[in-house]
Length: 152
Image (cartoon, rainbow, N blue to C red; front, side, top):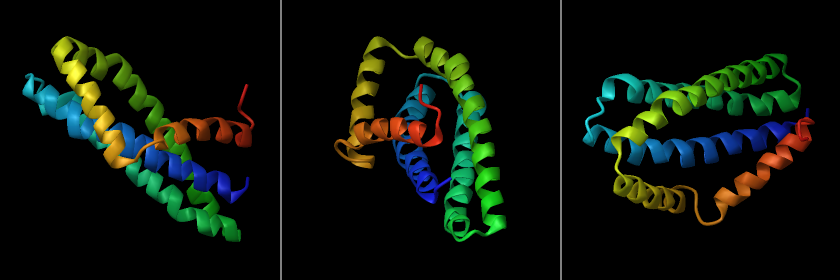
C-alpha cells in the first residue's frame, strides 16, 4: 500500500474526525448536556476517554508512516496495529453515539437547544478546519475508498 494512502488517512482522522466532529462534541454538545442535567460521569466521560484513546492511535499511526515508507518492519507493524485499534475503537464509539449519546441528547435538549447547537457546530467547522475543508474531506472519503479497493 502506498504511504500516501496512510498519510491521507491520518490527515482525515486528525482533521475531520478529531478537529471537526470531536471538537463539536467537546466544545458544544457535552457542555450543553451537562447544563441540561446530564452528569459528566457516564456517557460523556466515556466519549471523552474514547476521543483521547483515538488520538493516541491516530498519533501512533501517523508517527509510523515515515518508517513504513522506508521499509521499516516495526513501523509497518505500528501502522497496522494502530489502524486496527483505531478502527475497532471507532466502530464501538459510533455504536455508543448512535444508541446512547445521541438519543440521550435528543431527550435532554429542546428544539431551540438543538437549533443553537447546529449553529455552533457550523462555527466550530469554520474556526477549526476552515471554509470548504469539510467538503474536501467528504471528497477524500471516496478517494480513499477507491485507493483501498472498497468503493462499490
